[in-house]
Image (cartoon, rainbow, N blue to C red; front, side):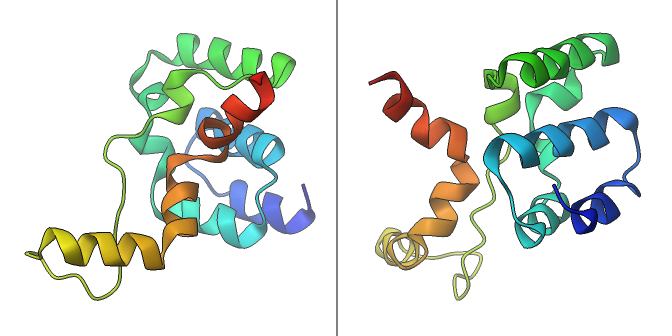
Length: 123
């Protein structure tokens, strides 16, 4: 991680949140721009780990640091953000499909690199 990454992480609210973003930056090799986007989209708050008691969350982050293994609580989000440009509050399914195809990389990154590439590692 670069100095620019730390400049983005230092102002975060809690040690737990800072550790969460630090470890995910390290594991997923996020650029500063990606880190900024993840913070802006409130990734930490949307993961199950943010709802756990602090001590359990700390243990999970320590395991991540030691083993580089993401748990489901770090990967799955609630809700997923699918904010594609041009789609209004109501839209047709075909419009969503077209938007997803146009923005497939962003869509896959929202799912998370670890989730996408975990099958490739185990094969």
